[in-house]
Amino acid sequence: MNSRLGKGLDALFQVSEEKQENEQIVEISLSELKKNPFQPRKTFDDEKIDELAQSIKEHGVFQPIIVTKIKDGRGYYIVAGERRYKACQKLGKATIPAIIRDIDRQIMAEVALLENLQRENLTIVEEAFAYKLLIDEYGLTQQEVADRISKSRSHITNVLRVLNLPENVQNMLNEGVIEFGHAKILAGINDKSKINQLANEIKDENLSVRALEQLLKEEEKPKNKVKEKKEIERDVNLDYLEDQLTHKFGTKTKIITKEKGGKLVIDFSSKEDINRILKIMNLHEITNIID
Image 1 (cartoon, one colour):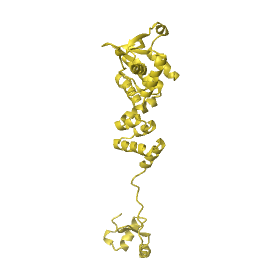
Image 2 (image 1 turned 90 degrees about the vertical axis):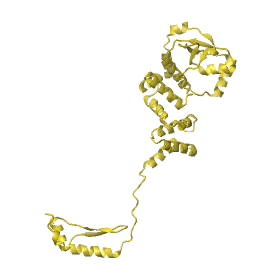
Image 3 (image 1 turned 45 degrees about the horizontal axis):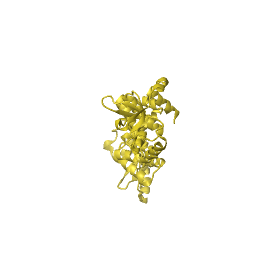
Image 4 (image 1 turned 180 degrees about the vertical axis):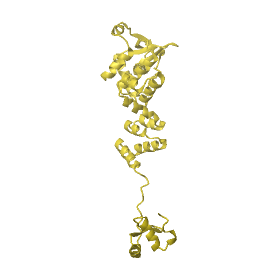
């Protein structure tokens, strides 16, 4: 067990050693028990429940479950130990050993989350919904959630981001079709259709996280690259004409051809120079416009 999580779990129960020594283990009817309404785990591994049931059949329930009285009804909520409860159900047992504690709803939510995290048997999506519950229902900040479960703030943020993914992609994450590393990258994309497209590519082509990163980098490159100018075969007579015009105007003259048409560029060095060129072109009426 992760020692940090273990300490966090003890703190959540907020029970002194003296009180724990005085607590009694009682046999509670399975019919009186209801699952923790804040249980983040939505699916349980039947094979593991069967293994636990076989162990309980042979050795009994080593550790009592923790329950709390339902305030506005009959019976008890399971705070910790739902797997043991399910195993006993499979065995057809009538009762299960339990410790009754007065635990408020927020603590129930936190304990359920911690218990599952200790066993590392929550999917990332289930984990995200559990964090969201603590934040939305009890007003905890991401930092406060991180402190309670001994995780980093960045981990909480990254896990919560998977809830922005389309539901079908969340299902792929739950089923292990895509990895958390893939999900973190996909969650940064705003286009839902693009996310679905990439998720299917990950599945069909078995793309690694690194391969997905590389794919997106390639797509980020300018899509509309400037097409290379089509080389146009230049008429050799244009070179001769350039030379003649340069000589005529007494300044560098260049003829630039394009796919269709082109342009004539005549250099000038001053206002006086441009007026000189205009006179050579017999455009006396517009000379001296530039003073």
